[in-house]
Length: 344
Image (cartoon, rainbow, N blue to C red):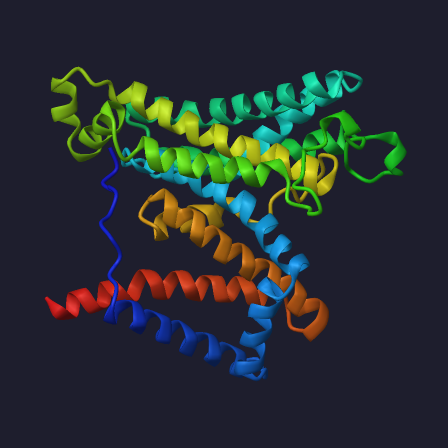
């Protein structure tokens, strides 16, 4: 197995304060370098992410796929697996769900919507289970296989929407026909917050509970710490690897079809804005702990949502939010470690 294991609690107190100060200093330096007043821009970031109901909804909508992609990395990560395949699993979930919608577009909502979500989850699970099985049975590195498999499914979406699934009524635009109303995801009354977000939150809470207690959680913990010890108790590494990778893939498969249905209204290129890599970094940042993943996903979603608003209203490139996201990851990962090394 890979050597990564769940980490202990993040340092608080002085380390947390130092990390926050370093991040703010790095962010201020960046905005100064691009000719923007740091205090004003950072104030605008907070306002654009949380200032009104629309901003808060947009932040949560951005957080939804990030959260599910983070779960796709964190669930197998509890076994010591390093999966970077959320991007491909997200796209396969969207492909699988779309295939079912196109096959039975006139089915009633009570049948079509659950079947579409199930198809997406099964598609993502299958795309996750295969590299897990390869890792457990043949010792093939799951990081490499999941990364390679990402490209296959992203290109598969392009092949389908430029080819057999392209709707002639789109005037040449590469996309399927619009999804029927029967498959529209339920939303919270008076908001744009859809079922995909609620599923992500529910899955994060369920995982936090499932991996904290019970015999199954102990089995995963034993295998993560020492494969040989687990095998002496008849615990199957290939089965657990495939199972956890499949669970992670199922979660992000739901995220893929949710984005296609609720955000795009059809399947088309550009389904993901780098959500797979962002989710992996969130999972790594949180040490594969599910409650912190939930909170950090919302924070990063707010950053991305604020970046769009900065570009629109403050004429600052939206990529600034991605740079801030990178600075956040680097400082949170580096500063506590550097302080701990210096103290030792």
